[in-house]
Image (tube, rainbow over all chains, first blue to last red; front, top):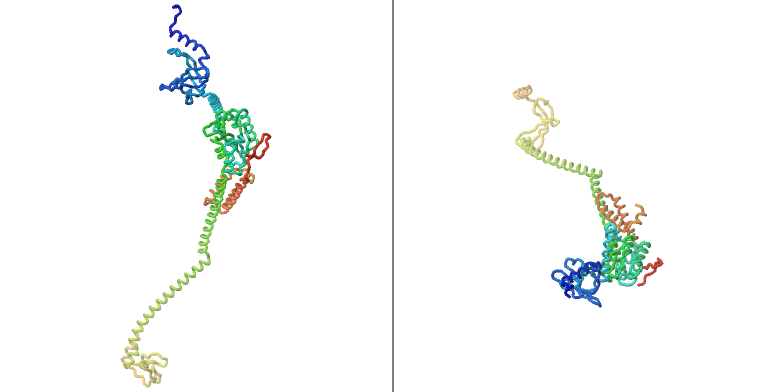
Length: 413
Length: 74
């Protein structure tokens, strides 16, 4: 009885070793429902995985917290990747978790991440492959379900913004078996038809519903499409591989329509503005030219020969005026002088003297007689007095001897 | 520029050309003759723009499995 006795420690160590040796136990996916989930202050998370048949203790150590991308709570169906081993202190085996993902969605999410990484590494999301979305389109291709909110939203917005754009719908199956193939067919068909831009998408849904847009084949079809593709999958928060690979990502189908279809009223406004600008610039130019012409006209007028003649005429007239006035001045001056002399003359007038008994004697010709020398007996004389004249005849000439001497002396000088 | 080229130009390109024309018309050195020709070009381009906008309302079409287009009834 006492022969084969082992300590608790020995047994627990032995059992622990069994688990460690088992490669299955070292890396195992376990799925179940979370219960008793406790977030310890140390950062470890203790929880129990259970199903209808039983329960399994589990722990996620703080060091492995990056393996949990969501906030796990009781009732979550999860898949836990970890190792089953023994906790010797309590003599219990438990699951040491490394990664925990939500069941279903979680797996898809992993596939999504893996594909995303793969395509990204291949450069399929690179901006240099993105085709520009043409601003003014005439045809819009749409790959989506013929029923549902997405097509209605796109149609409404497209019609409101520009009813002249031809929308062509490829009615695609957007979820379930065969969805990816249907979407790819749609992309190819519209590409062949030659639309200007294409919206590929659907309304919101669960990750399973949106899954077709995470398929590699769909991503490749979008990537290789020669027509620019706008992706519009689900709501703003849903991002699919199609969104990454599309030339432009729209958060919703409505937004995709806004991005694809230009506003016709805006364009017409722009055209009007340009027309007005063109007219304004032209009339500006004309006005400038007219103003210039007018200015030249004025200048030419000033320089015209007729204008020059007038100028000369004016000059002549001015000079005539000047001459006239100068002449006038001279006349006035002369008149003054004359008056002056007249005054002086008046003072010396023989008439005055004549009134005092003197007379002026002239010969027949009116010439004044100053000497007896030129007179002969019988000559006619006029004797001028202050109030008339007397006609006389020389009777006798008596020469004054002294006067003669003086006169002859004067003559000698 | 040939007429053919204009027909194929996109609205964006025509818009760009229009902007250039308008800009050029503002320059003082441009002669009146040039202005007239620029204006003429501008009006012509505006007309092209309007021609490009096929202003007929369109109903959405549906591309069926046979690759034929048919009216899409909501």
